Image 1: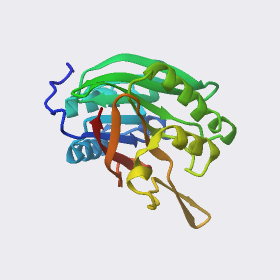
Image 2: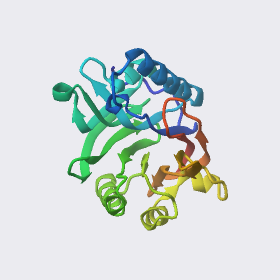
Image 3: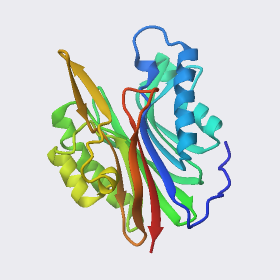
Image 4: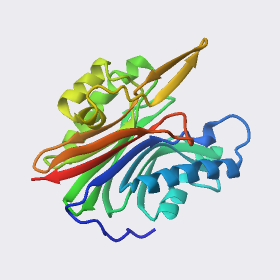
Length: 258
């Protein structure tokens, strides 16, 4: 769709939501379009309830005749950009990737590859023209394999710093690592962890792993802020239940000051 008109004033908060959408096209067996739409509608209603201005999404599915990113863009009336990660809708009938949606016009789409091989791990960026000025947006989905996961946040950090320059940036994604992991501690020292800034002691788990009768709850999904000339202040941040996925969404409301 065409870029939507800007209706939010500079004094209003910017609401950002990051979510892993659990790509249905990599599930085994037949994919029922009705079930996909039910899940997507649940996500769209969450975005509307939160009045989200920016969505940073992972595991965004595409089939031969249906594209999740285009459906969400049309359903919510948001500008959107997409980058393929794995699979091929044209050749294999299914793929998944990253997507950014914004109430504000998006320009300067950019992609980098954090890890290649059988499972590609790209990061996607774009610049939103907000009432505060230009804000760089990024979404990322990191590896499950520990030896790859350890190096990907550092690569992401260097790429964001190089492409965002002195301007502000918002980075969201499924990092597949707890906040006590060395690579995540390093990111939290360099950038602002929005949820932790608003909730110094809350656990905030975003994923439950059930294994041998036990449930392991971990915080794997994050929103980070990179601030320079335009300071981004966290007004609130929370974790939201997500019936559309096996990950919970993270929502943050931000304000700007120079």
